[in-house]
Image: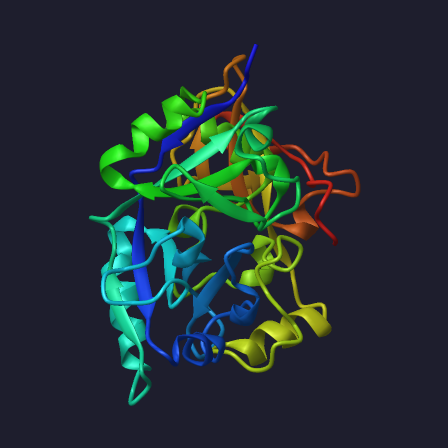
Length: 314
């Protein structure tokens, strides 16, 4: 029996970046190597303040991977940015600030496309995708790609909005909820935009961007690169976003996490568990966790147990 599930992510939106200078333009701004993006490859990246603080994260795909292109452009001449829907206007505005005389266009594509998460034991097989992060192929009149962060997260799809649900059903995916997907994402320790990272305060390496393939160290300078590199090479990371199990009354997002009554961090995404134990992501001080990550932590009246993901290097 198939375990493939899909959910349309209404909290995600799309921007379209076109123009002859689009690669060079983005290359000097975002954290990943834009030159790697092609019909067969999608990347995960971030846009930072000049001081290296988080502003936006997004998946960057070639619109030509969908087997078509925006009206008035040739195939492969546009990028699609899978970003936060409620904050896409802010991202577009900030990108345009740096456009200057570059031949670049920035448009809202959310009326054209929907974003979906596809997961389950045979999800990638149904899409004909190898378990290689970022691998991309045409699907359902749009495109699908293995999550560039971790293959275990499954795939994402960018589909023509009008036929997105039908395309997923036809491909054999059963409808799931955002909570179903969040359980998988949170258990893996992967952040989801400003749900997990505080705008203009968070730094990438506290949130796994290095190990989750969100930063390219060989591409050259980008906005906020200096602080990001200093954090890495001087081992300045003192906090990490980690998966936690929560036993007791479910705390709200933003609740303080404490150890022996002293501040140890803050809860971000929280989702009720299927078996009674809730899951969450928490930005925690590493010195509060104990050598085996077994320090007694609390969030209100709930017991919190942190876990180090197997992909994390610290």
